[in-house]
Length: 168
Image 1 (cartoon, rainbow, N blue to C red):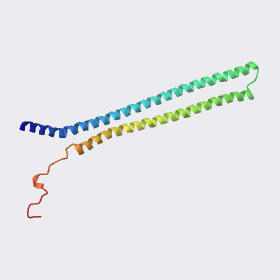
Image 2 (cartoon, one colour):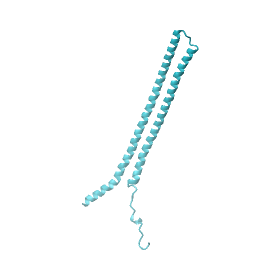
Image 3 (cartoon, rainbow, N blue to C red):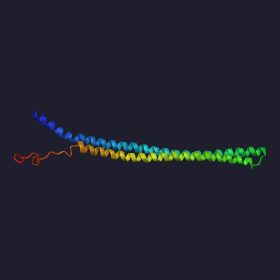
Image 4 (tube, rainbow, N blue to C red):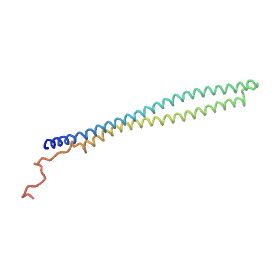
């Protein structure tokens, strides 16, 4: 019975340090994993930005082709009817160009706003990733400081706070 009691005391003494150490490792790992997830999200947002830029470039090329086709059709219709391009037909061609230019401007504005928003998100996610890692280490340090038993000590008898008889 005495040997079992001392074994339990030994295990309790080890657990006093091991359990907080395991908790500390878990907190550090949790902070690391959160950081990795946030970095992955930031990389996905960066990928979306790249896709946005590429699709914008394709839309721009497509719009130029559509403009050329529309102007070609208008010129052909005027040419077949024998009308010259000066005056009203020229104005119509210019309005067609202006309409396509306006569409291009709106697309450029909307795309730039989307890209800017995604870049801000990516930057914020990367900052959050750094903070998550720091948070894991901070939680671990707090655990060590409050439950780790590393700073617990027993006062030696010579520093006792009780006063000897006669000095009261």
